[in-house]
Image (tube, rainbow, N blue to C red; front, side, top):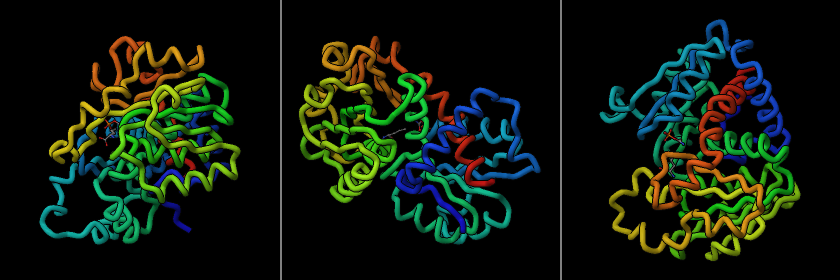
Length: 303
Ligand code: CP
Ligand code: NVA
Protein backbone atom coordinates (compact mmCIF):
# COMPACT_ATOMS: atom_id res chain seq x y z
CA UNK A 1 0.00 0.00 0.00
CA UNK A 2 1.37 3.45 -0.91
CA UNK A 3 1.79 5.79 2.04
CA UNK A 4 1.39 9.53 1.54
CA UNK A 5 2.42 12.12 4.14
CA UNK A 6 -0.06 14.91 3.54
CA UNK A 7 -0.70 15.92 7.16
CA UNK A 8 1.03 15.31 10.46
CA UNK A 9 -1.56 12.72 11.46
CA UNK A 10 -0.58 10.52 8.53
CA UNK A 11 2.08 9.11 10.89
CA UNK A 12 0.97 7.24 14.00
CA UNK A 13 2.79 7.95 17.26
CA UNK A 14 4.91 4.80 16.80
CA UNK A 15 5.71 5.69 13.18
CA UNK A 16 6.60 9.27 14.08
CA UNK A 17 8.92 7.99 16.82
CA UNK A 18 10.53 5.53 14.37
CA UNK A 19 11.17 8.29 11.83
CA UNK A 20 12.68 10.53 14.52
CA UNK A 21 14.88 7.67 15.79
CA UNK A 22 16.08 7.11 12.23
CA UNK A 23 16.69 10.85 11.77
CA UNK A 24 18.98 10.86 14.82
CA UNK A 25 20.85 7.84 13.45
CA UNK A 26 21.26 9.41 10.01
CA UNK A 27 22.43 12.65 11.61
CA UNK A 28 25.06 10.81 13.66
CA UNK A 29 26.31 9.01 10.53
CA UNK A 30 25.59 11.74 8.00
CA UNK A 31 27.54 10.48 4.99
CA UNK A 32 27.79 6.81 5.92
CA UNK A 33 24.44 5.48 4.71
CA UNK A 34 23.02 5.57 1.18
CA UNK A 35 19.66 3.81 1.38
CA UNK A 36 18.36 5.45 -1.82
CA UNK A 37 21.39 4.36 -3.88
CA UNK A 38 20.31 2.64 -7.05
CA UNK A 39 19.77 5.44 -7.89
CA UNK A 40 16.26 6.34 -6.87
CA UNK A 41 15.00 9.68 -8.15
CA UNK A 42 12.68 11.95 -6.17
CA UNK A 43 10.77 14.89 -7.68
CA UNK A 44 10.44 17.98 -5.50
CA UNK A 45 7.94 20.52 -6.88
CA UNK A 46 7.57 24.14 -5.78
CA UNK A 47 4.46 26.22 -6.38
CA UNK A 48 5.52 28.67 -3.63
CA UNK A 49 8.94 30.13 -2.70
CA UNK A 50 11.40 28.22 -0.52
CA UNK A 51 14.97 28.24 0.73
CA UNK A 52 15.15 25.58 3.46
CA UNK A 53 12.76 23.01 2.02
CA UNK A 54 14.30 23.19 -1.41
CA UNK A 55 17.93 22.93 -0.34
CA UNK A 56 17.37 20.41 2.47
CA UNK A 57 15.49 18.03 0.18
CA UNK A 58 18.02 18.42 -2.64
CA UNK A 59 21.05 17.96 -0.39
CA UNK A 60 19.35 15.24 1.66
CA UNK A 61 18.39 13.13 -1.36
CA UNK A 62 21.98 13.39 -2.66
CA UNK A 63 23.31 12.32 0.76
CA UNK A 64 20.99 9.27 0.65
CA UNK A 65 22.51 8.27 -2.70
CA UNK A 66 19.35 9.25 -4.62
CA UNK A 67 18.80 11.78 -7.37
CA UNK A 68 16.72 14.90 -6.68
CA UNK A 69 14.74 16.53 -9.49
CA UNK A 70 13.75 20.02 -8.37
CA UNK A 71 10.85 21.45 -10.36
CA UNK A 72 9.63 25.03 -10.28
CA UNK A 73 5.95 25.00 -11.19
CA UNK A 74 6.39 27.92 -13.61
CA UNK A 75 8.53 25.65 -15.77
CA UNK A 76 5.82 22.98 -16.06
CA UNK A 77 2.41 22.83 -17.76
CA UNK A 78 0.54 23.36 -14.46
CA UNK A 79 -0.31 26.93 -15.40
CA UNK A 80 -1.69 25.96 -18.78
CA UNK A 81 -4.19 23.29 -17.99
CA UNK A 82 -2.43 20.04 -17.08
CA UNK A 83 -4.05 18.81 -13.88
CA UNK A 84 -1.85 17.92 -10.94
CA UNK A 85 -3.44 14.46 -10.94
CA UNK A 86 -2.30 13.87 -14.52
CA UNK A 87 1.14 15.23 -13.72
CA UNK A 88 1.38 12.92 -10.70
CA UNK A 89 0.35 9.94 -12.81
CA UNK A 90 3.18 10.68 -15.24
CA UNK A 91 5.76 11.54 -12.57
CA UNK A 92 5.02 8.21 -10.88
CA UNK A 93 6.44 6.48 -13.97
CA UNK A 94 9.74 8.35 -13.55
CA UNK A 95 10.47 8.78 -9.85
CA UNK A 96 10.12 6.88 -6.56
CA UNK A 97 8.46 9.70 -4.60
CA UNK A 98 7.02 13.17 -5.15
CA UNK A 99 7.41 16.06 -2.70
CA UNK A 100 5.31 19.15 -3.39
CA UNK A 101 4.91 22.60 -1.87
CA UNK A 102 1.61 24.10 -2.95
CA UNK A 103 -1.36 26.17 -1.74
CA UNK A 104 -4.69 24.49 -1.12
CA UNK A 105 -4.69 21.12 0.60
CA UNK A 106 -7.28 20.00 -1.94
CA UNK A 107 -4.67 20.43 -4.65
CA UNK A 108 -2.23 18.23 -2.70
CA UNK A 109 -4.98 15.62 -2.25
CA UNK A 110 -5.71 15.71 -5.98
CA UNK A 111 -2.04 15.14 -6.75
CA UNK A 112 -1.84 12.25 -4.28
CA UNK A 113 -4.94 10.69 -5.80
CA UNK A 114 -3.21 10.57 -9.19
CA UNK A 115 0.12 9.28 -7.85
CA UNK A 116 1.22 5.67 -7.63
CA UNK A 117 4.31 6.56 -5.56
CA UNK A 118 4.43 8.21 -2.10
CA UNK A 119 3.60 11.92 -1.98
CA UNK A 120 5.03 14.18 0.74
CA UNK A 121 3.66 17.59 1.71
CA UNK A 122 6.48 20.13 1.52
CA UNK A 123 4.08 22.81 2.93
CA UNK A 124 0.52 23.68 2.02
CA UNK A 125 -1.81 26.39 3.28
CA UNK A 126 -2.97 23.84 5.86
CA UNK A 127 0.08 21.93 7.12
CA UNK A 128 3.88 21.70 7.21
CA UNK A 129 4.58 18.15 8.43
CA UNK A 130 8.25 18.01 7.36
CA UNK A 131 8.92 21.09 9.48
CA UNK A 132 7.23 19.45 12.46
CA UNK A 133 9.49 16.41 12.25
CA UNK A 134 12.51 18.73 12.33
CA UNK A 135 11.03 20.63 15.27
CA UNK A 136 10.34 17.45 17.24
CA UNK A 137 13.87 16.19 16.51
CA UNK A 138 15.21 19.47 17.89
CA UNK A 139 13.09 19.16 21.05
CA UNK A 140 14.34 15.59 21.54
CA UNK A 141 17.94 16.77 21.19
CA UNK A 142 17.49 19.62 23.66
CA UNK A 143 15.18 17.99 26.21
CA UNK A 144 15.68 14.24 25.71
CA UNK A 145 12.09 13.51 24.75
CA UNK A 146 8.86 15.16 23.64
CA UNK A 147 6.55 13.14 25.87
CA UNK A 148 4.72 15.28 28.44
CA UNK A 149 6.53 18.47 27.42
CA UNK A 150 4.54 21.69 27.01
CA UNK A 151 4.83 23.54 23.70
CA UNK A 152 3.33 27.02 23.32
CA UNK A 153 2.82 28.38 19.81
CA UNK A 154 2.19 32.12 19.58
CA UNK A 155 0.98 34.14 16.60
CA UNK A 156 -1.21 33.17 13.68
CA UNK A 157 -3.02 30.22 15.24
CA UNK A 158 -4.91 29.70 11.98
CA UNK A 159 -1.84 28.98 9.84
CA UNK A 160 -0.12 25.82 8.62
CA UNK A 161 2.45 25.73 11.45
CA UNK A 162 -0.25 26.05 14.11
CA UNK A 163 -2.16 23.15 12.54
CA UNK A 164 0.98 21.05 12.33
CA UNK A 165 1.88 21.76 15.98
CA UNK A 166 -1.62 20.67 16.94
CA UNK A 167 -1.47 17.35 15.09
CA UNK A 168 2.26 16.61 15.23
CA UNK A 169 2.67 17.80 18.81
CA UNK A 170 -0.29 15.74 19.99
CA UNK A 171 1.14 12.70 18.18
CA UNK A 172 4.42 13.25 20.06
CA UNK A 173 2.60 13.25 23.42
CA UNK A 174 3.04 16.98 24.01
CA UNK A 175 0.80 19.48 25.76
CA UNK A 176 0.17 21.93 22.93
CA UNK A 177 -1.01 25.43 23.77
CA UNK A 178 -1.91 27.94 21.06
CA UNK A 179 -2.36 31.66 21.66
CA UNK A 180 -3.11 34.28 19.01
CA UNK A 181 -5.50 37.09 18.24
CA UNK A 182 -9.22 36.42 17.89
CA UNK A 183 -10.22 36.05 14.27
CA UNK A 184 -7.08 34.03 13.46
CA UNK A 185 -8.27 30.83 15.13
CA UNK A 186 -7.49 27.29 14.02
CA UNK A 187 -9.96 25.11 12.13
CA UNK A 188 -12.16 23.45 14.81
CA UNK A 189 -11.90 20.14 12.93
CA UNK A 190 -8.11 20.19 13.27
CA UNK A 191 -8.36 21.08 16.96
CA UNK A 192 -10.82 18.22 17.51
CA UNK A 193 -8.57 15.77 15.66
CA UNK A 194 -5.57 16.90 17.73
CA UNK A 195 -7.52 16.45 20.97
CA UNK A 196 -8.51 12.96 19.84
CA UNK A 197 -4.85 12.08 19.19
CA UNK A 198 -3.71 13.70 22.47
CA UNK A 199 -6.17 11.51 24.38
CA UNK A 200 -4.27 8.45 23.12
CA UNK A 201 -0.72 9.77 23.63
CA UNK A 202 -0.98 11.49 27.03
CA UNK A 203 -0.80 14.96 25.51
CA UNK A 204 -3.36 17.75 25.60
CA UNK A 205 -4.60 20.70 23.54
CA UNK A 206 -5.42 24.23 24.68
CA UNK A 207 -6.38 27.03 22.28
CA UNK A 208 -6.79 30.61 23.51
CA UNK A 209 -5.84 34.26 23.25
CA UNK A 210 -3.61 34.84 26.30
CA UNK A 211 0.13 34.74 25.47
CA UNK A 212 1.26 34.91 29.13
CA UNK A 213 -0.93 31.99 30.11
CA UNK A 214 0.23 29.96 27.09
CA UNK A 215 3.92 30.48 27.87
CA UNK A 216 3.63 29.91 31.66
CA UNK A 217 5.91 26.99 32.51
CA UNK A 218 6.36 26.03 28.84
CA UNK A 219 9.29 23.83 27.83
CA UNK A 220 9.13 24.95 24.20
CA UNK A 221 7.94 28.26 22.74
CA UNK A 222 7.42 28.43 18.99
CA UNK A 223 6.35 31.14 16.61
CA UNK A 224 6.06 31.81 12.87
CA UNK A 225 5.52 34.77 10.58
CA UNK A 226 2.26 36.69 10.92
CA UNK A 227 1.74 36.78 7.15
CA UNK A 228 2.12 33.43 5.43
CA UNK A 229 2.85 32.95 1.75
CA UNK A 230 -0.26 33.83 -0.23
CA UNK A 231 -1.74 36.08 2.51
CA UNK A 232 0.19 39.20 1.53
CA UNK A 233 -2.87 40.95 0.11
CA UNK A 234 -5.75 39.40 2.03
CA UNK A 235 -6.70 42.86 3.35
CA UNK A 236 -6.30 41.88 7.03
CA UNK A 237 -4.21 43.83 9.53
CA UNK A 238 -1.56 41.23 10.24
CA UNK A 239 0.57 43.44 12.53
CA UNK A 240 -1.43 45.35 15.17
CA UNK A 241 -3.50 42.50 16.65
CA UNK A 242 -0.42 40.26 16.70
CA UNK A 243 1.88 42.55 18.70
CA UNK A 244 1.02 41.06 22.14
CA UNK A 245 2.16 37.68 20.81
CA UNK A 246 5.74 38.69 19.97
CA UNK A 247 8.27 36.22 21.40
CA UNK A 248 10.64 38.41 23.42
CA UNK A 249 12.69 38.20 26.61
CA UNK A 250 9.88 39.58 28.82
CA UNK A 251 7.38 37.00 27.65
CA UNK A 252 9.91 34.16 27.90
CA UNK A 253 10.55 35.03 31.57
CA UNK A 254 7.36 33.07 32.30
CA UNK A 255 8.59 29.91 30.58
CA UNK A 256 10.81 27.19 32.08
CA UNK A 257 14.46 28.27 32.50
CA UNK A 258 15.51 25.67 29.89
CA UNK A 259 12.92 26.90 27.35
CA UNK A 260 13.64 25.85 23.76
CA UNK A 261 12.65 28.59 21.31
CA UNK A 262 11.66 27.44 17.83
CA UNK A 263 10.99 29.33 14.60
CA UNK A 264 10.61 27.53 11.29
CA UNK A 265 12.14 30.54 9.46
CA UNK A 266 12.14 32.79 7.53
CA UNK A 267 11.82 35.18 10.48
CA UNK A 268 10.73 38.80 10.57
CA UNK A 269 13.03 40.22 13.23
CA UNK A 270 11.19 42.70 15.42
CA UNK A 271 7.77 41.37 14.44
CA UNK A 272 6.94 37.85 15.68
CA UNK A 273 10.32 37.50 17.45
CA UNK A 274 13.03 39.88 18.67
CA UNK A 275 16.52 39.61 17.20
CA UNK A 276 18.18 38.75 20.52
CA UNK A 277 15.78 35.87 21.14
CA UNK A 278 16.06 34.57 17.58
CA UNK A 279 19.86 34.66 17.58
CA UNK A 280 20.01 32.62 20.82
CA UNK A 281 17.18 30.28 19.78
CA UNK A 282 17.19 26.68 18.57
CA UNK A 283 15.93 27.81 15.14
CA UNK A 284 19.33 27.22 13.53
CA UNK A 285 19.54 23.60 14.71
CA UNK A 286 15.88 23.28 13.76
CA UNK A 287 16.66 24.41 10.21
CA UNK A 288 19.53 21.89 9.92
CA UNK A 289 17.23 19.20 11.24
CA UNK A 290 14.96 19.61 8.23
CA UNK A 291 17.64 17.74 6.28
CA UNK A 292 18.00 14.88 8.77
CA UNK A 293 14.26 14.50 9.38
CA UNK A 294 13.44 14.45 5.66
CA UNK A 295 16.22 11.96 4.93
CA UNK A 296 14.64 9.73 7.55
CA UNK A 297 11.12 10.22 6.23
CA UNK A 298 12.12 9.36 2.65
CA UNK A 299 14.14 6.35 3.80
CA UNK A 300 11.19 5.13 5.90
CA UNK A 301 8.74 5.65 3.03
CA UNK A 302 10.89 3.98 0.37
CA UNK A 303 12.30 1.00 2.22
N1 CP B 1 10.76 26.62 7.04
C1 CP B 1 10.63 26.52 5.70
O1 CP B 1 9.85 25.72 5.18
O2 CP B 1 11.44 27.35 5.00
P1 CP B 1 11.39 27.61 3.42
O3 CP B 1 10.08 28.31 3.14
O4 CP B 1 12.58 28.46 3.13
O5 CP B 1 11.43 26.29 2.72
N1 NVA C 1 3.46 29.95 7.73
C1 NVA C 1 4.57 30.16 6.83
C2 NVA C 1 5.59 29.09 6.96
C3 NVA C 1 6.83 29.31 6.13
C4 NVA C 1 7.83 28.18 6.25
C5 NVA C 1 4.07 30.26 5.40
O1 NVA C 1 3.23 29.44 5.01
O2 NVA C 1 4.49 31.17 4.69
